[in-house]
Image (cartoon, rainbow, N blue to C red; front, side, top):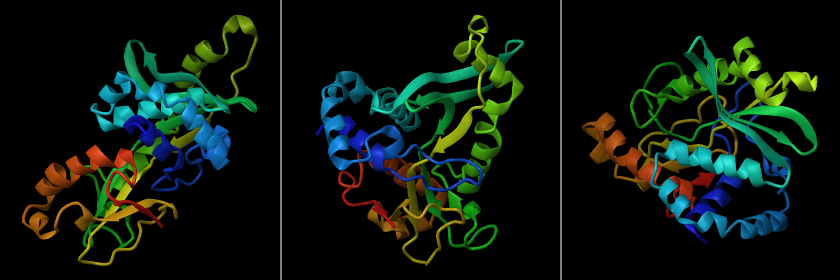
Length: 264
């Protein structure tokens, strides 16, 4: 199995890290049309050659967020029950960019368009920090600036809500319901996919963050690097060591990461 094919197999099963009230999570295998293991295996087999090309090898060396997005675009455009309608749809007003929508797709059984935002995230749990012990604010990203709370709020309030704005609907109407067709653009269904891993500290018990999906991927930090080596300069070490190692290995799946990930 080539690395890109293994990544695609991982993506088919990867759960979201968190649930956002009022918004649907990732398209599951049933929505994609590959619910049965035999159907899923056959689909992966048919696309093995395409995913073995040099272009995919180059993409795996690109920024992880971009590679993750490309995997989703391929999946939505080639899965049995979905079709990609548009990607990276930018919305302008007087030459000013108001925002961008990652993907617009539909299912074969329902022509209503779906607005999908995707992100792949890795967060380290901190036993002491703002809020209660289960606060998403205590889960920080490799940059030290991003947090699970911050990303969740931005996803819900900005990214997913954007497709309902008047400017976004005008842009989408131009592409999806041309004026001369007489069609009316139906409301878009916002949806997000945010897989990744939550890294738990080995030296302290920390509950799951509020709103975390039950089947999320989790891992002990010691599987990557001994914690004492991070203690002196946790922020720098997390960015330079754990962050780099995570982003280089996790898309390949639990097997390639040496059993790093486990679903609860």
